[in-house]
Image 1 (tube, rainbow, N blue to C red):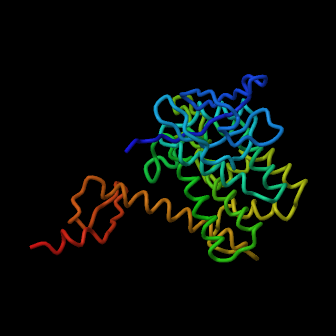
Image 2: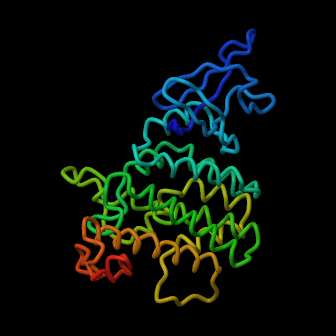
Image 3: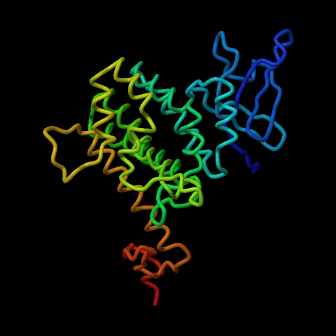
Length: 290
């Protein structure tokens, strides 16, 4: 059985007279007739998830991807780390599904902001704990966004709340791109403190625009990105609880996997490097073997 590869591609007309289109991934380029593509009407280029085998283009798998300018797409391709392909595709797919005009414009503007996105792809989510490898912040953030959107949907929140939970999950740690462990330590450019406060500095321009368009939505996003001080608030959005829960799940699952990495299936306890101890079910067949 043949193995097929999947990637995200920028698809654009190359020779309109002969109906030839360019299908360009980060590392490959294919040439196709529009009849082999899912081409939206009246487009000069769009993003899609494609399947290919070696040097042969196979098909378009998903054309429901957030449409960004060509220069933005190319820079995202360049910044993407080797293990971020799935996260990038899921992010662009779910962002494309957002119906709220103001929220969709907000996330599109953030994704188009090189000052935010370049370090976002490169940063670590922590110095010593979960997702502390290069690019870990992006993967963790997409995990939280996806978990948040599923939790919100399963608990029957309104569509606008589901969409807001996804966006807030994605951006909940964005202030960490300013932290000292994600910048040049020798030049002491980074900062140390509560990253939630730094998130408002990173997103200031985009939040201001969101506030001008929809004050209620701005309030919900701001509340969810704010630090939770002993749970004491006059009132709370449910999406705040959902995003915090999704964040905790992503962090704990990462640390548990790391603690048991390389350990035999019969070992039920393991310590993460922080000293926290985890327990797992283990392999039932191995555990019951004489």
